[in-house]
Image 1: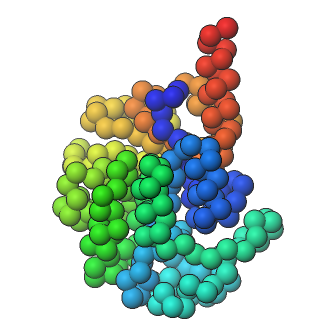
Image 2: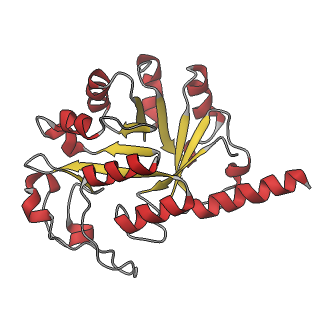
Image 3: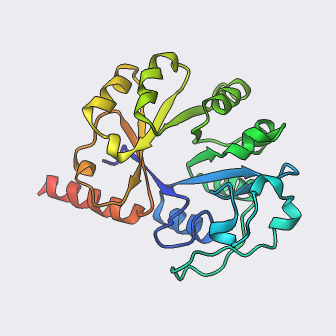
Length: 243
């Protein structure tokens, strides 16, 4: 299984607050890639944050895109019912620069605010200058099309979430790869993509699924909150094969 990439979902978010430096540092210690989310503030500052709203983690009834960065940089974020502590929202350029220096693979999901900002795609391109082993993903096909036009050599992955989207695959030859939930890890959904000769990454992986022992050949990577579990499972399987 060593050829299959492991990405820590929002960092190691099973053991630290998602999309924070602590979660990213844990991923680096495990020597896995990092999946993270980029949002754009009203004044064009790229931050690492998943939700369009600030309510869940910051307790503030506000839209990220409507806020200037000056109002966000001092915010404290935390998760209710989990003792992950309080953290600040990281700046995208700092995290990307750190990942470049550490040679950490990145799976960057572009959120809707990137498309909403008039210069959002161009700002992201500038942040990624010189970056290697990075691919971009989004639910927004039009945003990805824009990113592909700006960065033709960048891998672009469309996140599929509805069965009806499989009917559109033949019109999506320009996508480089596809991401979708593990529930779609069935021949019915995998074979059409295999025919396109496009790789797949699965998300929603907890680390104890049976499918991890028998992944479809199209699966290039997995995205998980618990990368240590996945590594341990595959190491055990490798040991068993050599006994």
